[in-house]
Length: 517
Image (cartoon, rainbow, N blue to C red):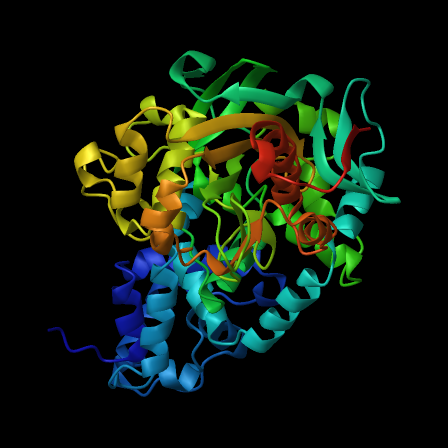
């Protein structure tokens, strides 16, 4: 192993950069940070600093303050430590390395998109982690969670006040109140009752150029730093980007292309946090929303922007009569999302819930039903192999019948045991996402008797709630809960309505009147 003369030399070599490459990076780094604009370091000067030896073998002497601040900012270490001889790695340094490694290929994507040298964004994040205030980040998460769903939805609808004829926000009247979501939809896009079978799902996968503006580098690095500090999982896997859609009862068709989850996470997904922070009084302007989703025309222009998507469904499982619980009913499942998920953190949602993305075969996996089946395996039956953020990349066919969990194998062995429908479609004003709402019904109560103990939420949830389809009072209270995500409530309301049509005596729901306006 090479013996490094200084910590600075060691850190540069760990980046797999030459002295000249690092000097170039340092110059660009200084130009990107106004407070460091006077910090310059030539390759020749850098060579002396890294060696720890001044001209003609003399001691280095004092480093110019602007240069010292530049190097300290890049590496997150005091200049005296950078110029000292290396010592055993500190546990905090190892932890920082581990934290940023959890972010997968997001760094590679940002480096390429910003025109930076490889690993530049990773080292920028590691430098920031040395001084990040995690308590402040947790406090901000708590403040964001206090902004209720109705408040967020109301302010978003006020921002996009120019609603086009034929489009409206989906909501419901319950008792004397109206609960409106941030999901923009049309009357023909809801109450679809469309069985998710091959003849009803027609998606065309095409190649297309990248969408949207250049990434806002400063906000992207902030997001990566926050994700590393809070242990948020972010893996750069392919996702589907919607180009156009044709939704009607009995048939769903559209055109999609592949995009990058990192691009979504470091651009469109930043809009929610920015808007919620403005509502919480932390900031007033909305530069990212003005850039990516400035008006309703931009929201509806799916092909002209990065329009990522979600697939989520209300899951209802038939249960036999029970001497303690009462008559036969459906178990309705609702999840409380974890703080470590990137999307919908600390919110209520239906389960399964997932990004619309391929598992292995992009063309075959584009069906909505493929996403729902995969997420049932992952989120309800504990199959780690189908969780792209954890593993399973070595399997050629993770959803092959020979690898299915026992509950999923039973459900798919005979037709009719599992019913999946698309209940609605809309565009979410929060971040421009398209949302496919669905209903998953298991009518045979033998499943609950045999496999009810297998049903367990994965790491994405901190809790799994179970409601009886006969308990109209509790379900009514649940509708009014401000903890819902908007897309979660959208799918929940549409799923309840359809379950009431299908469930017969097993279902007794509160009186809900849907609205689109």
